[in-house]
Amino acid sequence: MFRRLFLFWVLSVAFLLPAAAQPPLTVFAAASMREAMERIGTVFEEETGNRVVFSFAGTGTLARQVEAGAPADLFVSADVDWMDYVVEQDAVQADTVRPIASNALVLIGTADGPKVGLDAGDLETALNDGRMAIADPDTVPAGRYGKAALESLGLWQIVETRLAPMENVRIVLASVARGDTPLGLVYQTDAVIEPAVATLAEFPASAHPKIEYLAALTVDGSHPAAEPFLEFLQQPQAREILHSLGFLTDKMN
Image (cartoon, one colour):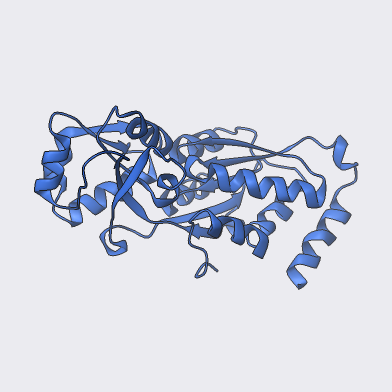
Protein backbone atom coordinates (compact mmCIF):
# COMPACT_ATOMS: atom_id res chain seq x y z
CA MET A 1 0.00 0.00 0.00
CA PHE A 2 2.82 2.41 0.89
CA ARG A 3 4.53 1.87 -2.43
CA ARG A 4 1.28 2.41 -4.31
CA LEU A 5 0.66 5.68 -2.45
CA PHE A 6 4.24 6.69 -3.12
CA LEU A 7 3.75 6.12 -6.85
CA PHE A 8 0.81 8.48 -7.05
CA TRP A 9 2.47 11.03 -4.76
CA VAL A 10 5.42 11.18 -7.14
CA LEU A 11 3.08 11.56 -10.09
CA SER A 12 1.11 14.37 -8.50
CA VAL A 13 4.21 16.31 -7.46
CA ALA A 14 6.35 15.74 -10.54
CA PHE A 15 3.91 16.54 -13.30
CA LEU A 16 3.99 20.30 -13.65
CA LEU A 17 2.20 20.11 -16.99
CA PRO A 18 -1.16 18.44 -17.62
CA ALA A 19 -0.69 14.84 -18.73
CA ALA A 20 -2.13 15.62 -22.16
CA ALA A 21 0.61 18.24 -22.67
CA GLN A 22 3.44 15.87 -21.74
CA PRO A 23 5.39 14.08 -24.43
CA PRO A 24 4.97 10.30 -24.23
CA LEU A 25 7.11 8.18 -21.96
CA THR A 26 9.40 6.09 -24.17
CA VAL A 27 10.31 2.54 -23.17
CA PHE A 28 12.80 0.34 -25.04
CA ALA A 29 11.94 -3.29 -24.24
CA ALA A 30 13.00 -6.79 -25.30
CA ALA A 31 10.85 -8.15 -28.13
CA SER A 32 9.65 -11.07 -26.01
CA MET A 33 7.90 -8.62 -23.68
CA ARG A 34 5.73 -6.96 -26.32
CA GLU A 35 2.28 -8.14 -25.18
CA ALA A 36 3.08 -7.78 -21.48
CA MET A 37 4.53 -4.29 -21.80
CA GLU A 38 1.70 -3.07 -24.00
CA ARG A 39 -0.87 -4.26 -21.46
CA ILE A 40 1.06 -2.77 -18.56
CA GLY A 41 1.42 0.49 -20.47
CA THR A 42 -2.33 0.62 -21.06
CA VAL A 43 -3.09 0.20 -17.35
CA PHE A 44 -0.48 2.81 -16.44
CA GLU A 45 -2.00 5.26 -18.92
CA GLU A 46 -5.49 4.66 -17.55
CA GLU A 47 -4.38 5.24 -13.97
CA THR A 48 -2.07 8.21 -14.53
CA GLY A 49 -3.12 9.79 -17.83
CA ASN A 50 0.44 9.58 -19.12
CA ARG A 51 0.93 8.06 -22.55
CA VAL A 52 3.54 5.33 -22.98
CA VAL A 53 5.16 4.36 -26.29
CA PHE A 54 7.37 1.33 -26.81
CA SER A 55 10.20 0.27 -29.08
CA PHE A 56 10.61 -3.52 -29.22
CA ALA A 57 13.64 -5.33 -30.63
CA GLY A 58 16.39 -7.73 -29.64
CA THR A 59 17.99 -6.71 -26.36
CA GLY A 60 21.43 -6.29 -27.91
CA THR A 61 20.10 -3.94 -30.57
CA LEU A 62 18.28 -1.84 -27.98
CA ALA A 63 21.28 -1.77 -25.65
CA ARG A 64 23.46 -0.37 -28.43
CA GLN A 65 20.82 2.26 -29.20
CA VAL A 66 20.58 3.28 -25.55
CA GLU A 67 24.36 3.45 -25.38
CA ALA A 68 24.31 5.76 -28.42
CA GLY A 69 21.88 8.12 -26.70
CA ALA A 70 18.60 7.08 -28.33
CA PRO A 71 15.61 8.93 -26.80
CA ALA A 72 14.51 6.25 -24.32
CA ASP A 73 13.40 6.89 -20.76
CA LEU A 74 13.53 3.25 -19.65
CA PHE A 75 15.34 0.16 -20.87
CA VAL A 76 14.03 -3.37 -20.28
CA SER A 77 16.62 -6.08 -20.92
CA ALA A 78 16.07 -9.82 -21.36
CA ASP A 79 19.29 -10.67 -19.58
CA VAL A 80 21.79 -9.52 -16.99
CA ASP A 81 24.76 -9.27 -19.37
CA TRP A 82 23.29 -6.56 -21.58
CA MET A 83 22.04 -4.60 -18.57
CA ASP A 84 25.54 -4.82 -17.07
CA TYR A 85 26.89 -3.55 -20.39
CA VAL A 86 24.75 -0.40 -20.47
CA VAL A 87 25.55 0.22 -16.79
CA GLU A 88 29.26 0.02 -17.59
CA GLN A 89 28.75 2.42 -20.49
CA ASP A 90 26.96 4.88 -18.16
CA ALA A 91 23.88 4.66 -20.37
CA VAL A 92 21.47 3.71 -17.57
CA GLN A 93 21.32 4.66 -13.93
CA ALA A 94 22.93 1.77 -12.07
CA ASP A 95 21.04 2.35 -8.84
CA THR A 96 17.68 2.00 -10.61
CA VAL A 97 18.20 -1.51 -12.07
CA ARG A 98 15.31 -3.74 -10.99
CA PRO A 99 14.50 -7.41 -11.77
CA ILE A 100 10.90 -7.69 -12.95
CA ALA A 101 10.38 -11.22 -14.30
CA SER A 102 11.92 -14.47 -15.45
CA ASN A 103 11.05 -17.00 -18.15
CA ALA A 104 11.67 -20.51 -19.48
CA LEU A 105 13.21 -21.72 -22.75
CA VAL A 106 11.39 -24.14 -25.05
CA LEU A 107 11.82 -26.04 -28.29
CA ILE A 108 9.01 -25.41 -30.78
CA GLY A 109 7.82 -26.89 -34.05
CA THR A 110 4.78 -26.42 -36.25
CA ALA A 111 1.48 -27.30 -34.61
CA ASP A 112 0.86 -30.17 -37.05
CA GLY A 113 4.45 -31.39 -37.12
CA PRO A 114 6.07 -34.47 -35.55
CA LYS A 115 6.65 -34.77 -31.81
CA VAL A 116 10.28 -34.11 -30.95
CA GLY A 117 12.16 -34.39 -27.68
CA LEU A 118 15.51 -33.15 -26.47
CA ASP A 119 17.26 -36.09 -28.05
CA ALA A 120 19.98 -36.15 -30.70
CA GLY A 121 18.17 -38.64 -32.90
CA ASP A 122 14.89 -36.76 -32.68
CA LEU A 123 16.53 -33.48 -33.62
CA GLU A 124 18.38 -34.94 -36.60
CA THR A 125 15.22 -36.58 -37.90
CA ALA A 126 13.06 -33.48 -37.41
CA LEU A 127 15.58 -31.14 -39.02
CA ASN A 128 16.22 -33.41 -42.00
CA ASP A 129 17.50 -30.89 -44.57
CA GLY A 130 16.11 -27.91 -42.64
CA ARG A 131 17.54 -25.61 -40.01
CA MET A 132 16.82 -24.75 -36.40
CA ALA A 133 15.78 -21.13 -35.92
CA ILE A 134 17.49 -19.43 -33.00
CA ALA A 135 17.98 -15.83 -31.91
CA ASP A 136 21.57 -14.88 -32.71
CA PRO A 137 23.66 -16.33 -29.84
CA ASP A 138 26.28 -13.60 -30.32
CA THR A 139 23.91 -10.70 -29.61
CA VAL A 140 20.51 -11.87 -28.37
CA PRO A 141 19.85 -13.26 -24.87
CA ALA A 142 17.44 -15.96 -26.07
CA GLY A 143 20.13 -17.26 -28.43
CA ARG A 144 22.73 -17.17 -25.68
CA TYR A 145 20.44 -19.13 -23.37
CA GLY A 146 19.68 -21.54 -26.20
CA LYS A 147 23.32 -22.21 -27.02
CA ALA A 148 24.12 -22.78 -23.34
CA ALA A 149 21.21 -25.22 -22.99
CA LEU A 150 22.14 -27.18 -26.12
CA GLU A 151 25.75 -27.39 -24.99
CA SER A 152 24.72 -28.50 -21.52
CA LEU A 153 22.56 -31.31 -22.93
CA GLY A 154 25.21 -32.44 -25.42
CA LEU A 155 23.13 -31.36 -28.42
CA TRP A 156 25.13 -28.40 -29.70
CA GLN A 157 27.31 -30.49 -32.01
CA ILE A 158 24.15 -31.90 -33.63
CA VAL A 159 22.74 -28.50 -34.60
CA GLU A 160 25.74 -26.14 -34.70
CA THR A 161 26.06 -26.25 -38.49
CA ARG A 162 22.30 -26.35 -39.02
CA LEU A 163 21.27 -23.14 -37.28
CA ALA A 164 19.39 -20.17 -38.71
CA PRO A 165 20.41 -17.22 -36.45
CA MET A 166 17.84 -14.44 -36.38
CA GLU A 167 17.56 -10.88 -35.13
CA ASN A 168 15.22 -11.58 -32.22
CA VAL A 169 13.06 -14.28 -30.72
CA ARG A 170 9.84 -13.07 -32.38
CA ILE A 171 11.38 -13.55 -35.81
CA VAL A 172 12.26 -17.09 -34.74
CA LEU A 173 8.65 -17.63 -33.70
CA ALA A 174 7.34 -16.34 -37.04
CA SER A 175 9.79 -18.47 -38.99
CA VAL A 176 8.58 -21.68 -37.36
CA ALA A 177 4.92 -20.64 -37.57
CA ARG A 178 5.27 -20.14 -41.34
CA GLY A 179 7.03 -23.48 -41.73
CA ASP A 180 10.24 -21.86 -42.98
CA THR A 181 12.20 -23.72 -40.31
CA PRO A 182 11.05 -27.00 -38.75
CA LEU A 183 12.31 -26.23 -35.25
CA GLY A 184 13.08 -23.16 -33.18
CA LEU A 185 14.13 -22.01 -29.72
CA VAL A 186 11.96 -19.38 -28.04
CA TYR A 187 10.71 -18.42 -24.59
CA GLN A 188 7.65 -20.22 -23.28
CA THR A 189 5.80 -16.90 -23.28
CA ASP A 190 6.38 -16.59 -27.03
CA ALA A 191 5.17 -20.10 -27.79
CA VAL A 192 1.80 -19.65 -26.06
CA ILE A 193 0.77 -16.65 -28.15
CA GLU A 194 1.22 -18.36 -31.54
CA PRO A 195 -1.38 -21.05 -32.35
CA ALA A 196 0.57 -22.19 -35.40
CA VAL A 197 3.39 -23.60 -33.25
CA ALA A 198 3.57 -26.33 -30.62
CA THR A 199 5.85 -26.54 -27.61
CA LEU A 200 7.78 -29.76 -28.08
CA ALA A 201 9.98 -29.66 -24.99
CA GLU A 202 11.04 -27.33 -22.18
CA PHE A 203 14.73 -27.02 -21.44
CA PRO A 204 15.68 -27.67 -17.81
CA ALA A 205 16.33 -24.43 -15.97
CA SER A 206 19.63 -25.93 -14.81
CA ALA A 207 20.82 -26.21 -18.43
CA HIS A 208 21.24 -22.48 -18.96
CA PRO A 209 21.78 -19.25 -17.00
CA LYS A 210 18.69 -17.91 -15.27
CA ILE A 211 16.47 -16.01 -17.69
CA GLU A 212 15.99 -12.68 -15.98
CA TYR A 213 14.35 -9.48 -17.22
CA LEU A 214 15.58 -6.23 -15.72
CA ALA A 215 14.44 -2.63 -16.09
CA ALA A 216 16.30 0.61 -15.46
CA LEU A 217 16.06 4.34 -16.04
CA THR A 218 18.31 5.68 -18.78
CA VAL A 219 20.83 8.40 -18.05
CA ASP A 220 19.51 10.66 -20.82
CA GLY A 221 15.81 10.17 -20.06
CA SER A 222 14.02 13.04 -18.36
CA HIS A 223 10.31 12.17 -18.43
CA PRO A 224 8.66 12.78 -15.03
CA ALA A 225 6.70 9.52 -15.38
CA ALA A 226 9.82 7.39 -15.86
CA GLU A 227 10.46 6.63 -12.20
CA PRO A 228 6.78 6.01 -11.42
CA PHE A 229 6.57 3.61 -14.38
CA LEU A 230 9.63 1.73 -13.14
CA GLU A 231 7.94 1.52 -9.75
CA PHE A 232 4.71 0.38 -11.39
CA LEU A 233 6.51 -2.55 -13.06
CA GLN A 234 7.02 -4.00 -9.58
CA GLN A 235 3.45 -3.51 -8.40
CA PRO A 236 0.83 -6.29 -8.12
CA GLN A 237 -1.10 -5.11 -11.20
CA ALA A 238 1.96 -5.35 -13.45
CA ARG A 239 3.03 -8.65 -11.94
CA GLU A 240 -0.43 -10.07 -12.49
CA ILE A 241 -0.24 -9.15 -16.18
CA LEU A 242 3.22 -10.69 -16.49
CA HIS A 243 2.09 -13.85 -14.73
CA SER A 244 -1.04 -14.13 -16.89
CA LEU A 245 1.18 -14.21 -19.99
CA GLY A 246 3.43 -16.93 -18.63
CA PHE A 247 6.23 -14.92 -17.09
CA LEU A 248 7.55 -16.02 -13.71
CA THR A 249 7.34 -13.32 -11.06
CA ASP A 250 6.72 -14.93 -7.66
CA LYS A 251 10.37 -15.05 -6.64
CA MET A 252 11.39 -11.68 -8.06
CA ASN A 253 12.44 -9.03 -5.57
